[in-house]
Length: 140
Image 1 (cartoon, one colour):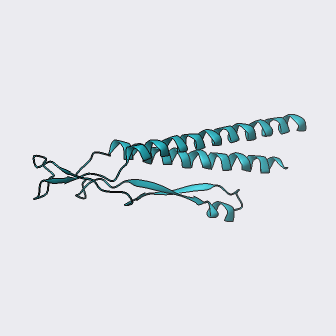
Image 2 (cartoon, helix red, strand yellow):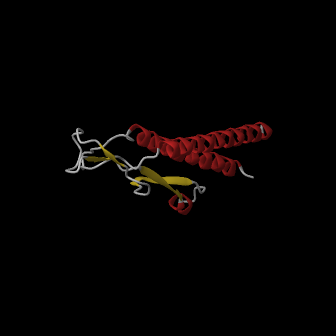
């Protein structure tokens, strides 16, 4: 394997790190906004998610494949919970407040999965870094 090929492995691992960092940022936003009943657009907060996609543009430029994140995009799956609270300022005419569709248990699980993926990318990055370092030492 050429040195350039090894550096490509570092690029791929770095793209995975960047993607998971963005993913964790969106999850953190969901957790923070779980109880928001009114946004600037009006209505309750809508859960956000990211879409992982193959970095085809990178491959077209001759750089190694990688991963990119698209988003955040609204994820309307899940239930918008309605709670009876007539004293709440966001209550409708029947006294119900619509809460966000963020499920905190799901978000925490998603955060654990994203963290493990991030850690796997760190381990991959370190492995590629060690391989590149050893290859340079052998060329001397």
